[in-house]
Amino acid sequence: MPATEFPPDVAGLLGRLRDRLAAREDVVGVYVYGSLVTGDYSPAASDIDVIVLVQRKPGTAMTRELTEMHTALAGTGGPAGQLHCLYVTADSASDPERLCTYWFGDRMTQWQMKLLTQAELASAGVALYGPWPPPGIKPVPVADLQAAVHAEITGYWRRISRKRRCWLQDSWVDHGLVVLPRAEAMLTTGDLITKSEAISRLSDLGVPGSLAQEIRRRRDGLPVTVSKPLVAWGSDWLITPLAPGSPLAWGEAVPANLVGALAALHACYHGAADLPAAIPRVTPAWWQALCREWVDPGLSEHTARHPPETTARARALVSRAAGHPAASAVLAGLPPTLLHGDVHPGNVLVHAGQATLIDWGSSRAGPAALDLANLVAAGSADVAHYARTWQQLTGQPLPAATIELGYRWAALQIPVQYLPWTAAHRPTRDVEAALDQIERALGQLRSLGIRDGSCRDHG
Image 1 (cartoon, rainbow, N blue to C red):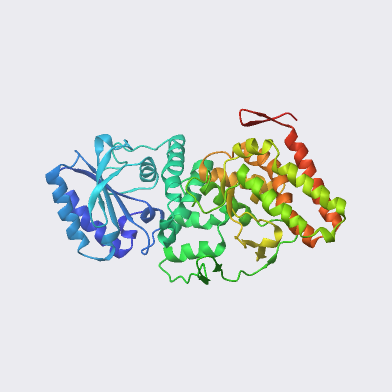
Image 2: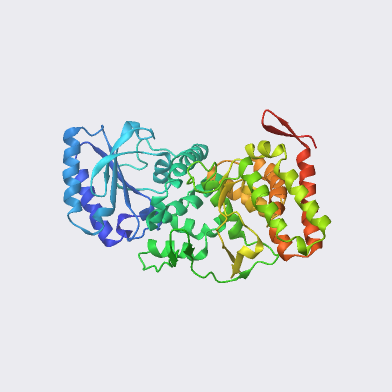
C-alpha cells in the first residue's frame, strides 16, 4: 500500500517523520507495518507502527536528538500520539532479544524487534524511505513464530490472566480476548490474522456475541453501553441482572459457548494458586465434612418420605463414601481450578442459541470435571470441544486425568452432594437410582490402587 493511500492525517505525519529521518546520515530505511498496511487501521484504536533501520545503536546524543524530533512531532496533535517507532540496528535486525531504542507515543523507552514484528514487516510492510526488502529482515519460519506465540501465551499472558484488577478495564478485556484467536490461528494454521478477523472468530472460543460486538464498537470508536455486572450487592449477598432465556432441558444439546466458557474459566485458574482463601476447596477434609455434616443430616430430615431401608442404605453409602481410602489419592491426582460448583441444566439459561450460567453461590475450587459431568458425557464431542479450547488458551494439551480420573470422581461426588435434594423432592425410585450411582462409583474407586498417595487403575 503506497503512503498516498494512508488516511490524510496519518500520511501527513508519516511524511514529516520520513523527511526528518531521511535527512540523517545514520538512517538506513523507514518502514511501516501493521494495521495501516493490512487495511485494518482504526483511528480510535490502532497504533501507527514504524521500524527505522539505523547504522548503529543510538547513543546518548542520537537518542536525545530523536527524542526532540518526536516531541516536536507529538506537539502537532492528531494521530501523533499513536506513533510507535522502533530504532533497530541494521546488522542485528533479526535478533529478537536485543533491546532497541523505542518511541512509544509520548516518551522514549526500549523494546525488542520480536519475531512477530519481523514476520509482519517481511510479509506486509511498506518502505517510506530506503531499500526493500529491509536489510537484515527475512521471512520467519512458521515453527519459530509458533514457538514464540506459545511462549508468549504460556508466559506473559498466563501471568497477566491472574492479575484481577486489570480485567476490570475495558482495554485489557478487549486486548486479552483479541489475542486469543490470533494466537490460535498462528498455533494451528501458521496464519497471521488481523484484529478485525480475530474479533469475528471470538464466538468460536465461547465469547458471547454481545461482548464481541462491544469490542468491535470500541475498536471503531463508537459508543458502547455496557450492562452492569451487578444490580446491587452487600457484604454477603449480590443481585445480578436478569438473564433472558429458558432452562436447558435434560438431554438437550449444550450450547457451545457454555462449554468454551467453562474451558476458559478452568484454564485461567488451573492450579487455583491465587484464589482467595475464603473460596472452599474440594479436599479430603472438605469431602468428609460434606458427607458427614451436610449430606447425612440432610437425609435425616426426610426419613418420613421414604422407606426405612432406603434411608438406611443412603446413610450407609454416604458413610462409606466419606471414609473411602481412595478419596485422598484421587483428589491429589486432580489439579484444582475455580468451579461454578452447581452446574446442571436448571442453572443454564438458553436464549438465541447462547447459554448463560446462573446461580454461582456454590463456587469452589476443585476438579474441573465436576462442572462438566452433569452436562456432557466423557467421550462426547462437547468434551472434545472443551479440550480443544483448553489447548488453544494454554498451548498445552488437556491433562488426561482431567477427564479420565475427574469423571470417575464426579460420578461419586455429584450424586452424593445432591442426595439431600433428591430425598426432599423426588420419589423413592429416584433416590434408589442415585444410590445405585453412588454404589457403582464406589465400585469404580475400588479398582484404583493406592501407593504413595497416587492412583493406579487396576481395571
